Length: 336
Image 1 (cartoon, rainbow, N blue to C red):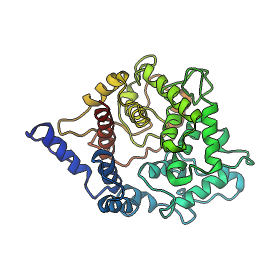
Image 2: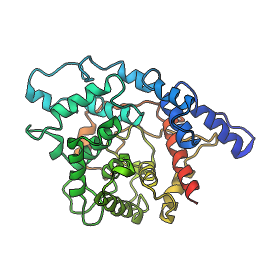
Image 3: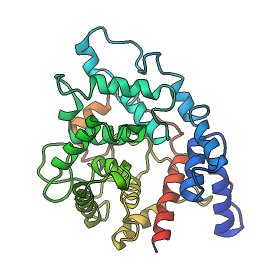
Image 4: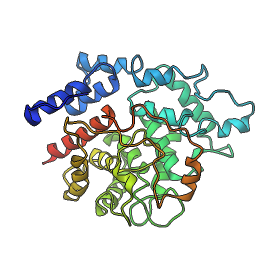
């Protein structure tokens, strides 16, 4: 990790960028080149980083645990009914959860093993004729799956488009979404907006754009964290995020959708800047499930049965959190 220096902000930022460009984590290197340094995807250095994602670092480590048929669970189910609940449990180490991370790291169906994961999801989770499918699940699962499958390269598939239809239908009158049955939206339910952010602009219908505008307004009205009493986990940064929310999740989603210049981001940006370490990095504050007083009782009960999953060490400088934080700040700077 970078060491504190006396060369001012520029020297600090240079060292942080060099740290992020390290070849040990090509997914971080790729996004640093493209999102922070503005390098073209056609450049040889960028292409090399993209090609290395499945060959080195976090993605390689995860894929090494994949079974030949594409799943990550220890044993294959022995019945169709068992398959219907397969891929999701246990949280957060089964196939669906690992696939979400792999999609964040930049892998697609062109990478070995990803196509098998997608085939399993299509066969057992995205068929209307089955008694258990994602079209009838709570919104957070729908949004996560839509985002993941779009990033994997299936955004035009009719089954994935149907997930987006569900997100449009499930938007509340106040512009937000709710993973439970409440009539009002909640900041916790960010997955729909993140799914829309995964869609290229050319693929967004007028209805999707209208939904995005209403959804972003919902978050901006609340300054990304003002919803009842302050909830401590929202002010701690995490990865993987699974279906949880924090201020960095909100900032990354809203700025990625084209709203980095809105003045209502200032309180959340103050939180972000205040968490930067002297050496220029940000920490991985906690690994989920990170719950506190006021958490949903069902979540608390489920959390007791969970083995946390992380790519980096809790309480230490995080390449992923630092990358996302700098990307948010760059979007804001570019919009000013």
